[in-house]
Length: 78
Image (cartoon, rainbow, N blue to C red; front, side):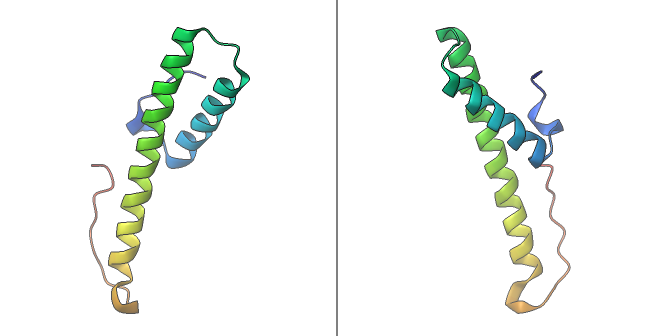
């Protein structure tokens, strides 16, 4: 799998890449250097997915404040 810029990935694409990264690491047939590089990419993907989830949770909380839907603009690209 080619490494893409995180900001160009959707949550679903990042999660698929993270799962593939974990599978490769668990297989245990990589060099130490390749394992470290893959682990670093996995860390980046994890942080990116967590950021997207946090942003989505914030948006939902703002939209459903007190059980009422309100209009709030949230920039998910930052």
